[in-house]
Image 1 (cartoon, rainbow, N blue to C red):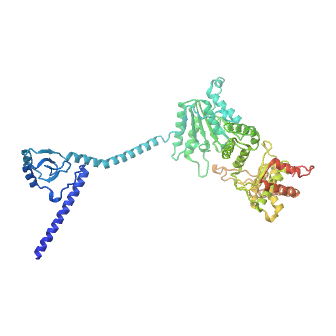
Image 2 (cartoon, one colour):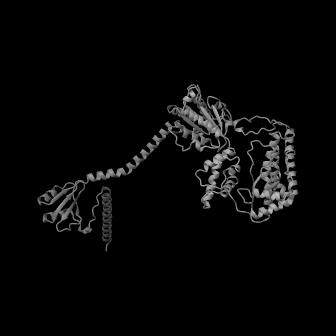
Length: 632
């Protein structure tokens, strides 16, 4: 074969390959176009050799084999249906010219069915839909940003509005019948409610309604509960807000909120405004390291002006609560602003009984439980503490699947609230015996001293951080404490360390008395420096103050010389030394009794106070009197 023949064959193969690639690309474009335009023509079943050409189409028209022709003005393609073709078979596609007058004339002359369908509308619709695919999400994103900006704008406009919760008639579910143990404070506030309900009783004789009532008391004493009771009883519009809600990081917002609050209050007068934790905004002005907070001071100035300024606020009573009255600005406490300052103190024995009865209403309590005994066991408990105590007892009762709360659950609840969760009992070892001697040392000395509170129980069951505990119950309410009582408490506190030294020797004493030493050192120092119970006389030698943040202690010199400071230390050591010597003497004298009590404690792990005192009484001489430290 000649080189010319070979080159011709190669060129022919290349042409065929290019033609096939072109047809494949055209077919792909046709399929893609059909998908985009929404037209999905069926793929022809005929092979490439069976496709009709334009000339063959004219011949078949002349021979009468064509029954129907579909033309599209937008595309140079004619779809032809042949005679004898299956109904479900796809139409034949024939490429035609852009202008086909001869073809149309021949079709009409043969009376062949002719249909003209333009694909322009479908393409326009598809183009519109394709554009919507990216236009709709874009519009949605724009609307989202617009909405957020609108919300931000509305928040910015409302930034200076008051955040106080408003109730036209507060339904707190709390009335004065739910408040117990603070009768004096309740009586003062009941009078405020009477002012609101029946003002004519007071205005008839010229009395004016008080402008403000400041509730002062430790946390948990019932200040907020009293405010809820007032709102439930008064039946007038009620605003409630916290002091911290006035102040923001932006200057002027707090003052704006104060103005807005009093504006709303004037529109709804007579009404009540309750400000909880007012010390957050009412601290003294111009104090603190580095100057005061300008925003807080502006807020306080606006509050002072609204309470008693040039414009009168008739019918608006402000009730505020705080547990730090010492930090409040003096202008806030003067008459005309907070006319009444009501102290809500911790309840006494009678008050605790009333509080326990209130919280026991909705609980199933066994008839054997003595509310009076429980009240005696909880001196210093606030109303919140007592409510938590009964709730813990109810939880323990449900956990133990009992029908009613018994004294056992209450005892366990008291221990849990005061000392913490119950731990795993210690195994019988030297450590357990040492802890037993330590606790018996506290209890035995307290029982031998007549000026000490009686022992309630001694236990080796760990609670919290303590491996053993000795509980005492005051026999009566004590507002004042005598020198003999303080010395008795110091001596009993040293009983644990003294028992360790008496039994195990000085080389075996442990760190268990660390917290005891810290407590008795503070008590002894107060005796010398604050209470005048030492040889240094009736002089205040140290003034304890925690008001550094108010600027009161800046540049303040010490009121005592170095010589007086050394004398204070000497007096403290002397008091503690005498009490420790007394504790050693008591335990050495009653060593056999201490050993007996320790064996009982190790065996039963808990000795109740009554049982403890019986053992002590049975094993001491009848003529022996209880020791007193009053003259020591």
